[in-house]
Length: 510
Ligand code: HEM
Image (cartoon, rainbow, N blue to C red; front, top):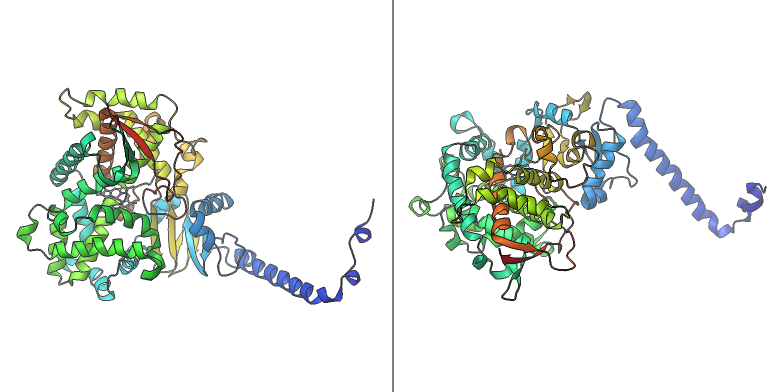
């Protein structure tokens, strides 16, 4: 057997002109190795009480590329490497703690002061264009000894938790969805083909147009459609552009992002400047928010941006889930579609009206399919700011850093959801009803800002899908491909499909 020296050239054989390059390369390797040891191994020895850093290859840049191209994979890698314990990622030199396990999330929820959500809200409002004075005013203690943020959370609950006020809102919302889901009302840009015997419809646009319009109508007086007739379409555009929010890109680099945000925000500004008697049909929560801000003397811009934040949070998710549900149902190769159709049938009266009690309380397969699609496509996150040095799950967190609860990573946990957690199993939540309360399942977030819209969201989504399955004969055009979930960046709720990957559905009257 030949020895290495016999086959590899010795250093003296290498041409002299290569020597400087080799020296640089050697120095670079030595420096990189020293940096790697200093960054990833030394801290584990010197600061073993802090969440370990997930290794990366390029100094300073850190995990930035992966964070923007496949954050979901990045967190899954960290969860695997550190066996579910909290870890640190670094983007452009900034460290951030990542939590991927239910017990750690529950501990974080119990520390609302040390792990504070308010600075995150303030940052988002700044990205929406709120002035520093406006942001400060919102977090100042005012009426009732509370900040505006705290008062709004209470108002959301009064409006959206089960009770009289939700009943009023729900009536308007569900009735409107019911009215809009007829064959004749499938029209405009969402129709991609109309050959008389059926239409080919863009499912994403159909779901968005109907749901956002109905919600806008339920929360605002219908005068809003006169003031900004394109509000529904522009809101949908903004939802696709919103990932650019924290990048603070100038107008020339993010035209659609700015124009859609301006349209909706300016429309809401014109709306709130109308006298109250012209907004008589609006919901309790919108009136209460506007009155509260007026009493505190907020300027019009601050009021409009608060309303814009509300409009987004209310509208940004439900239509996307409808889209995914229909996609999963139509691509399913088992008897799911037929089983769902027979399950929902008793909820429809002979005159076509819907028995909501039967639909919401006696259709377990539809409810389970809805949760399963939500589990697979949701990317809600819990962002918190560490306000003072503190300890979470036995690890020391440093003040000033961000903490990120990666709920999506938890939704794929095999111990919580089984070894088939990566697959779509429509009966999963029906076969194991306790899953819906599992602390690993957090599609609506949790703690103080736990989504108050979860009650109405589940109802409108179930109703929309049931009507589609009952009133229409739905099919996939030949060659249809399952759209991919945009797994690049968390949207804070249900993810969109990757750009250009909507689903076209063949629709006929049933
Ligand atoms: C599938 C549909 C939905 C999902 C996945 C979803 C998810 C979420 C999440 C993750 C949050 C933030 C929670 C946190 O930060 O911990 C949130 C907040 C909120 N959601 Fe939803 N949501 C949905 C539908 C709705 C609907 C239909 C409404 C109203 C009609 C609504 C109203 C709100 C409001 C007002 C907040 C702000 C709560 C606060 O800041 O205290 N949501 N939602």
